Length: 533
Image (cartoon, rainbow, N blue to C red; front, side, top):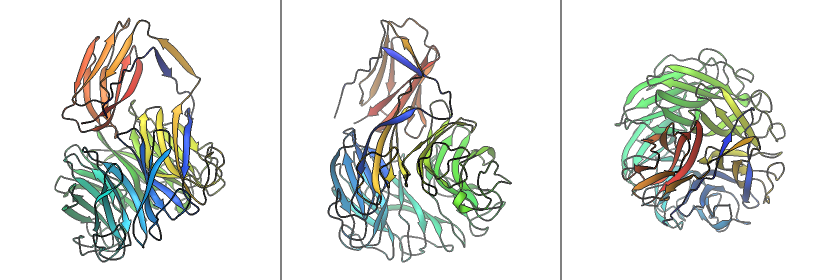
């Protein structure tokens, strides 16, 4: 769908962050589910401006129809404000669980998970126990192909990453050493697999040693290599370095052939492990981990040493060779976990996760003791806490991959809820429901700056080959370049902003959502661009 959008600005609103809490409030929300447990794993925007919401369901009533068995992967299609348009269950008579969903440049979608079935929608042949399960679907949810990957042991559900060459990286952990899995080093290994858009395996590589190794986030790096921060419980096998304690974060940089360029162990005397969230920066990487230590590489831990129920989020900035530049523990006396990590326009970072605390760095938690709120945190580019905000009710609200950045001050969050209290005001179906909501800055602490006789047009939007930034009759100086970032915060272009007309040639840029940002008289102006072909 091609739309010509005229973005006319009569006011420029300047937001001043003056407290440790943000001003993003819930604009709309929706809950979906049945009488049993239903939880969200991921959400993605569709080309029509709505959302695909992916998760796992144990229900067969309420909003859920045609569950195949124990639990199914459940996909819900909504419009832009959370009204359900259709839903579909995928699976067989055994259990299926979801991981995440991605979209390619041709408008097709792929979701990952794991399956214990060999019937129903699972027709590609389960190798034994649990297999990785990858499914390609149309925008209407129809299966194009599905494929089981694994060996005779248990293979965890694969998380999907669309690569710059159009292929797909599938990653998780495995107990197998046969079938599609080339080797097993011990109890549980990290397994990275590259497949084509048709599901054919191009590369399959295993990393680990004799004990427990796992990975929750992998990124493609600017040199066409890969980086991940997982976990290691001992030295040996492929794990080398200065072992710090009980369990360490195992960070690995791979080249484009999946060979280890360098590796490093991080942590303290107790339990430290990589969790969801990795970014490539201009000067290295930022990874998120969980920690129960407060010595060696770790300082500022809030809980009881070695207590896994008091895990802090540990944010670590390293340079391109793995040397720590700064680190920061985030949390309180309870358990904290991450979901997603994002770059901010000002060089800082946004973490979306969950918290059971209401002390330390955390305030405003709605939950009973031992239960979680969804927790959103802003860090500066030096790791200082800028603000934090809790969203939830008295019971458990949790989140994994479900965060979409619309702009710096506008997000869609998708997690699970357990009770309609506090921030949760939509209908509750039972146990856990899908919970989707939009948050937006509605602060009253603003200054309005009027651009008299001026107009800023950004068009066409959506675009195909070119975007024009047109500025007319401005009465002030333009003082910055236009920065264009992708959804992962990577800079795609930097344009000198002319006083009348600036053109971005986006023919070599993949389809998707991008964000622009520039200053006028030291005032930031941000917006979103959609490229469709």
